[in-house]
Image (cartoon, rainbow over all chains, first blue to last red; front, side):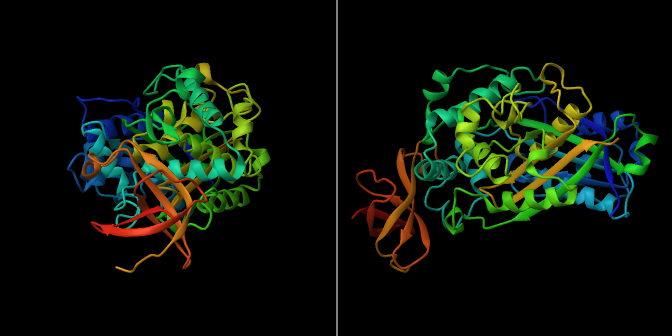
Length: 387
Length: 71
């Protein structure tokens, strides 16, 4: 396995874009990444597309060649990857493997989702199909409900409070307000977060990520060739993808997501690092409780300490380990298929020193955690300076 | 369908924002039940709201959905 680098990044803003279709968003992000890498479409040897539910949201199938050809990429493998909200994390994992193995040199990997053309109940239904339709979903589970039940149990076992959950939301909105690519650039107060409209008790609208449209893309190359394309390569230090039960009621302990623990441990091992070496992270805050679980399951703090750690401000922009400097899924937005590659974009931006108002000083080693469903897929990636 | 028998509430939520087929049911209580027979089952709660640790009895299947009520 040879070292792999990110040599170009591109992203659309995340938001509600009634005049844009799935393909135009994907093409915009892809072209930006190609331009950033100084790579022509004809140089791309394989195209990997993460997309959760294009056929349900937009009616279009056969998406990978549909998007690739619109950028002038033909004659190469072009494949769509589906792994719920970790779809583009899974596409990214396969793209890294393709380059690391020596099969390909230059590849393009993207994530895209177009969600806002459907009603909220229909969006809820499409997303719920990432759960177990013959069990929990038949009984009336939605994704907010599944994470609400995780939150309830976490509160019961560890004393996690509503205020600690809300602190995730307040922090991520504060960060996202500084991000020009974010869907909801709005600072919220603790009082607002606590008084939000209930979605699935104890989660309110301020605990839930946004329904968004958007796309993100990165170009990968072997590290040894990166200097041909860019002066700012970002190295993939470690990466792992894991799987687990789809239904929440099949997991032995829902306050720990094993897929996250396993992916973290494997990625740390590949990188030769520990949790303590990670300076900043983009974590999958599809719901506020998910960020607390991730902080714990990735070993940043002990199980049960995610809430107090967050409420004390340790994960804010000025804290010891900033989490979701981008605004996270909560404020930046969550076009589900785009989120995994979007996180890679955000880490690379920080490592390249291009994060503007959100720029972190300790920016040489970052981690991204992309979660599918209620923890049936997880992709953890550790990125660092190439030097 | 197999009768699930009684159990204990492992976790629960009150759902306000449902999928289209349940828009007339909200808010409804959903729970994961630790079954006395081993294993867990996701079902609905009929009647008064229950909390983690409460004992519940199986009531019936409605449209294949298992309903429980406070035991």
